[in-house]
Length: 235
Image (cartoon, rainbow, N blue to C red):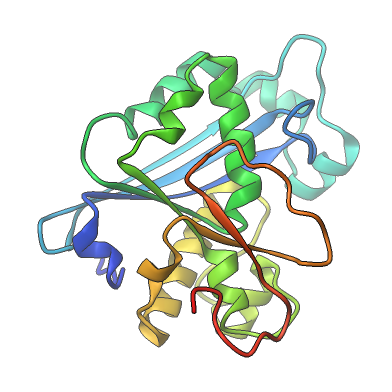
């Protein structure tokens, strides 16, 4: 079993899920999930990881929908690949949601989590099960918000990988599983630097130059997070 350092999140949660999605565009109302990956860590009472599972699924699009050329170029996911290996959306929903039901404390982490969670919510809503993401035992953490408190602009995932010298360890391929793995390594690196992860529980930053939009997951709270701020967003 690999060794993980999850800081204060380890003893708090029974399960921690690091996830990433690829999509056909940027609007969760009209665009669709193309791929989802999850790294599911199950923990004991003192925060040690006792089980690690990985899920990586391509998802069939609605009839008549195709992948835009710019997304094919970015992700290398083609329409032919989706026809060959894409899974039925209901099957994927059942797999993903199975990790979330129950009463044990659960944390979901992603890089730029607000984006990923909006698409995840839209996906669950199509199944008429969006309430799952608002269940009281689930908390959310945004590794982008954490990174912005630690490093100067720019703040893409690749920038964070470069900043911490992780290029030999992970890759930002714009494929969901690679990016989830990179996010997990980045999170551990940040917690080793400063174990303040619990302060970011359900707290997401946004650029104050742009208006903050409503988020469908109600417990997520947003605060303005300007570049080069003198104090961390939770202070």
